[in-house]
Length: 619
Image (cartoon, rainbow, N blue to C red):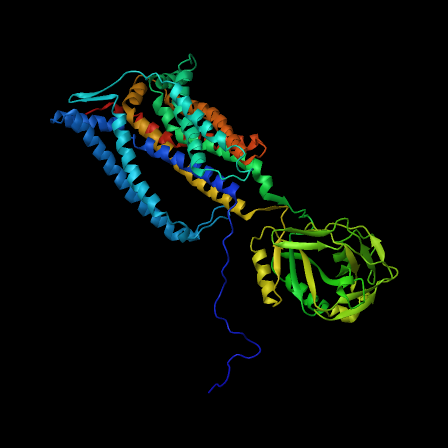
């Protein structure tokens, strides 16, 4: 039977785990960037929904003509088309929700570019989910009814207005002008500390990007209307677009709006990156990580601690030192003390702190730093000692909270130039080899710091170092070195944008592929007829390619201009200088062009199949 308190001096009672931590306030500038990201990512998806609703329109109209033959009137035909669109939209919502839940069930195991999320992070807001469930079917019905305005469905066939409607420019250009007018009053508000209306920002950006979408059909129509001559494939493509410029322009609207938004984000990120990125001064050619810990028995613990680090897989070399505090006065009044640091290490390790031309065991060096005060980055702060003892001066070495040992700086201690450490700090104080320091000092508690060379091809080395550090029982920290320290919120936002942009680009590519395949199927009779009269298949394939390239080329020109306008307007709100990263803009445009060319290549097998002569059959 156990009596008394079950806890002895070796244990403590634990009532709970963790502690309440106040959430970190989100940076106001990053909050505005989040609004930009949301607008840029959602608008292409909305355009995809609007375009996808019109897939299969010609087949539907022919089917409704048969319904008219059975006695239905024009109004009934429209209601049937709206009902089909509504049913398809509802079915799509069910399938999409099921797919979302399926992906959400195993998203914990997915990783993209070192980005991973938990399943509970993917929990849509109920109001937004309801808005989506109501909005998509409503948009499907409205677009279906609007698309039937130019179609006359009779019992014996379907008639369409010939030629392409002449598009008006004024209302299309008015949208981006209104967007700029909404953003202009916000200029400089963030720098002045004023609250920026996120709704006004979102609406302004949406108007600019929607303006890009509606300007594209006008630009395509005006441009191709002036094109003449060229090869047979070129003429086939241009003539097809002259008859109907809406379909090819509509197919690439998502790509163009996505590029415009991406160019704007690239401009914003390139200009504000320096605000959220601080050079650390670290030299990765000298070390890859720093491990620091507090040792109870000084030098003896340091040797075993260093051996444990060397035994960690992925560690190539370790250079360790022991840091102690020294003061300049032996009196009992702490107010008269002047503090500095004593770094004890072997010669190879001391060379990380100073430029040593010659070093042997027993040497002592004096390093006078140029700067004073305390400097911090991330969660690390270090004081630069304002005072360094002179050769022969009496000092006291702190051996703990209350103990201290007197020590005289050797008269032959040599002043040496300081050298930035591999992690970018400059140390001022006394550098000493172990034999130059009293034995009782070597056994005193001190701060151990180790510079490590790691195998950079092994991504698990840092985790093994944490394991080794805590296995030693001394605790401490592992700091992987980086040349630039980036704000965690900024990095999280950027990584989230990359993942969302990849998903959006995949969605747009799939929508474009479906659009191209649907257009080919609707024209299968024309394609089979051209082959029947002797048109080479290669010519038809090139004509399909030109029909994709021309709208994309015009759209990219429009998107770059709109993207620069978006980026400039947002940066004016931040009062940040505008820096155009033309290399990043070229990469964005190259990715978009690659997606279009890849989609065209994937559609070629369908094209070969539709060019068979049996495509001339009709019912």
